[in-house]
Length: 114
Image 1: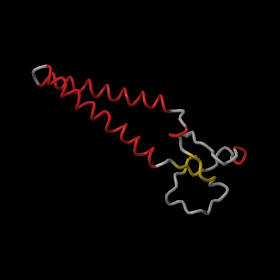
Image 2: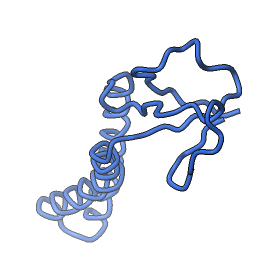
Image 3: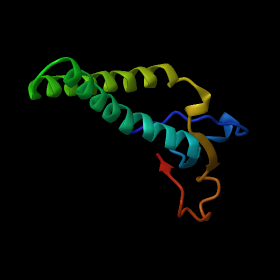
Image 4: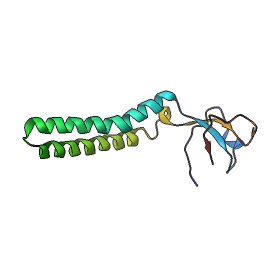
């Protein structure tokens, strides 16, 4: 079983049962900022590490070592950001509908979570 934490907003917890299918929503801003943090932050820190080490040390090995250290630093920043924001309501998905109560609704853009 896979579980996703989601805010209920105006829904009452008593209207849900174990095994219900629900439709959740994540804001576009959260998706874009999350993609930036996860993909670009390590890449940019890797480039910065390579440039900084190449500036202070001679040779390709120093640039490669700086790139590796920068990449690891970027991954550490991603993990730190995930830890700091994991309980933030701004970054949590929200329950939009209980699919079990309305099974005939069009679900072309819905994410179904069991």
